[in-house]
Length: 161
Image (cartoon, rainbow, N blue to C red):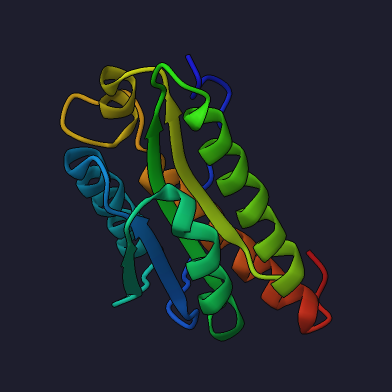
């Protein structure tokens, strides 16, 4: 189970953060679940009305995140890639992961990594935070980004972690 060992991190007040979501459009049901999970995390962390930007697919997430990062305290990237019979899966997964990491480091902006890389539709649905899903990766990605953004804000103000 992928979620085994995940830390229990209580939501914190993030009402003062500027946050954006960049979400792919492929696999509508999975993406709707990921976005809904992120919205649940925002509510739990007292964050209202983050910006939501849609892009065609997971491959496009890094360039949109790079455009958003300078203006936001955190960006949550949501996407899904389902393995097929060609190396396309590997190329897209690697490009998205490497690109989002680069954006985070180049801009010193937390990027919530909510990109599902699954062997089949069933795995994606099980991680999408839908009714009956065993995991809620949209919530987890948003919560991690918010917690990290709050930590960076404290560090930048000289309060330490």
